[in-house]
Amino acid sequence: MDKFQTALNQSVNALVYLSCEFERLETEHSDMLSEGYPFSQDLREVVHRLMKWQDQINERR
Image 1 (cartoon, rainbow, N blue to C red):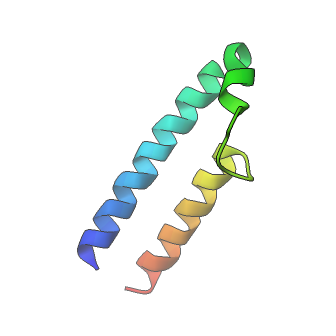
Image 2: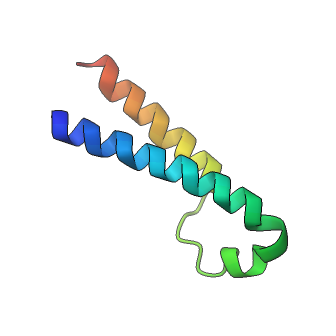
């Protein structure tokens, strides 16, 4: 379980960074960024939900 939590933490950190970069570029490159976007939710919401899931897992340990 420790390896999973480490990987989840790294994923959350990477997605937080990606979300910040996405927001920085969104105004100038929104058409390119939205084409083929793989999620049905805003990236910030995806990150928020992943962080919430991570908290739930950590609380159960």
